[in-house]
Length: 152
Image 1 (cartoon, rainbow, N blue to C red):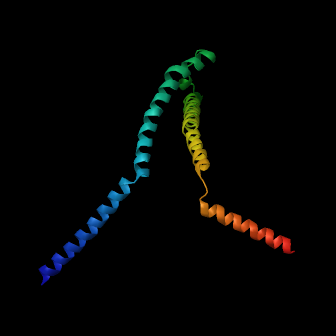
Image 2: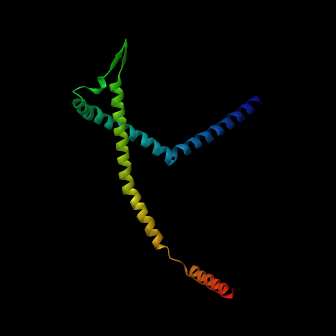
Image 3: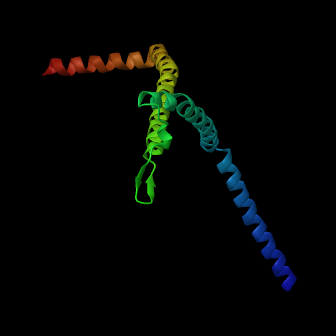
C-alpha cells in the first residue's frame, strides 16, 4: 500500500514538472524573449566597437587638444587618496558617443521602416471601397434626415 502511494506521488510530481517544463518552453519560445536576447548580444558587440572608437581614436585626439595628456591618467591626489577624474571623463565621453550612435541608428531605422508602414497604411485606407449595402443604407439615412428636417 505504501508503494502504491509513493508511485502516485511520483506520477503527480512528474505531471507538475512536465507542466512546469512546458510552461518554460512556451516562455522561451515567445518572440519577445528571443528579441531581447539578440538585442543584448548585439548591444554588447556594439558597445565594444564604440569603446574602441573612444579609447583608440577620440581619447588621444582630445588628449592632444588638452595638452598631450591621456585623459584616463588624469588624477588628483588628496593625501594618500587618488581621485581618477580622467577615467570618469572618459566614461562620460563613452556614454555620450554610445547614446548618440544609438540615437542615429534608431532615426535611420525609423526613417526606413516607419515610412514604409505609413505608405502601406495609406494605400490600405485608399483601397477601402464601400459595399452596395453601405451606400444604400447611407442614402436611406440621408433621405430620412431630409424628411425629418422638412416636417419641422
